[in-house]
Length: 151
Image (cartoon, rainbow, N blue to C red; front, side):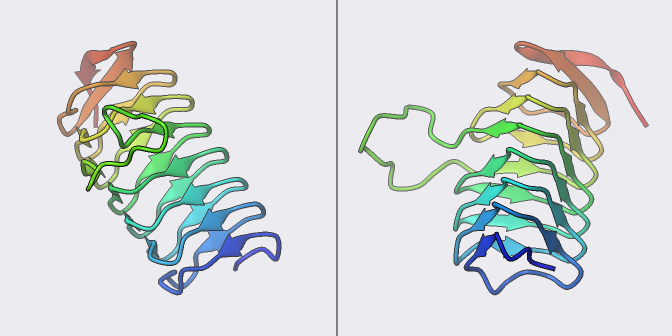
């Protein structure tokens, strides 16, 4: 289901995916099956979203982001893709940021470019992720640090 107030240019949207009002999806974006994109999500061209992914309101997925299956992205999570941003100056390519299968990212977290968040890892709300996060770990804080192992 694509809400009539969404602007979805991509034809690569999987069956059973819901895209709600005020979402913008660029033409080359790839979105898997059974996803839920809540109101106000933006997805650029060089982005791949797996199956069964939930993206809450106010999230922008910029070029270079890879989101694997069963990922939860909380409201207003911020992804960055340019380590040295300047107005009107664009890199030839953006670092690849990967969110592995089953990971969860808490509301208002910031994820720096080129980071990998491991399988079933969890990022606490409001954290700033500056380094790779291993699988099955909970990271919290600004900057985010290991807190404990999780199931």
